[in-house]
Image (cartoon, rainbow, N blue to C red):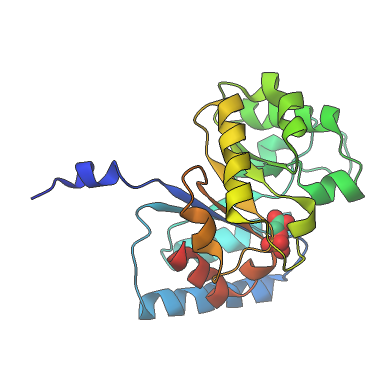
Length: 239
Ligand code: PGA
């Protein structure tokens, strides 16, 4: 018999991350978990080689965690953003120390933050630094290779996840090609070493496997398609 540990050598661990963006109320979150759970219990499958992470709004994090642990789902949580400041007099900001109570991961530098909230290299550096200081694993989103090169000295030798998300693919229904995405992932690993690199942009249950089966891609960051619990479950299952 082949020992299990031997088997796992051939399996890469996949990260399947849901970015709910500014969607869902508390009630809708409850329903999402209820429907996700109903389906997974109806049709059980192993999550052993997959890390499923949900990144809801700050207002939902605590209740989402409560729903997930009540239902005994093996889901981890992430925040969608983080303050670049420590705790203190920064009205409207949510600090790393506060996030750390509720999440293990944090999305940093999403293109929507760069575009609508003016996040630049300096802010992203601060957010990366404070995430790492509080042992929150940053999921750094980039759309071009030069964004990695700019931040390289900050992230080298740290536990970090990078998500390659080309701008044209986000929310457009037009994903990048798996070959292109894999080439980017390979380039990112060449710069940063053996860190997990994900693909994001119009991922669905129909195309997810095309990405996760590529040699350098370690998972996906899913926006729109993660809002529907059954579609998201299909993504997790098909990945
Ligand atoms: P999308 O978003 O899956 O809706 O394209 C991805 C993202 O913005 O992270």
